[in-house]
Length: 181
Image (cartoon, rainbow, N blue to C red; front, side, top):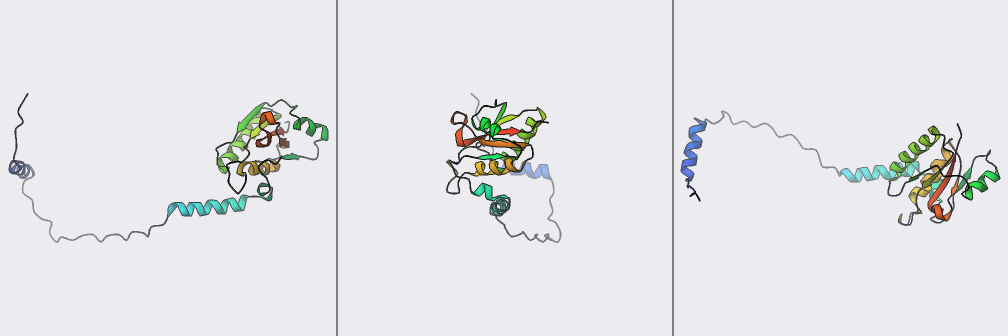
């Protein structure tokens, strides 16, 4: 084992001064004026306010009226009763599905829009969209269920949709009949 050699602070100071050389103070001692700092603005509360405003502007009456256990159903005029009965009964083969659980409203919108576009490109006729029942959505009711109901009604690619059979998600999912190209 080696012994540690102790240095004194005066030795360190002498070495430092020798290395640096002669030092002179800056003439005038002027300081630059400090820039005025902007007043702090709460970043997240403004973002929250904008998000609430955006949601209020984009929410439709269809979304507000959907209850947790309520069944969804929609059909374009050219879809006949027989086709709707087959769709409700789960008689169409589900060729693809998407699960929107744990997504925000905006994320779900983009994901669903891409999913429907891919389905059309692949000439898929029936898909399942799992939106959830909204049991943990709080007093406002289901968020994604109402949003999916509204979005699917607006898209021309969707011919019909209805709540799924219990073994496919029940009122937490919908079968969607897409247009044939």
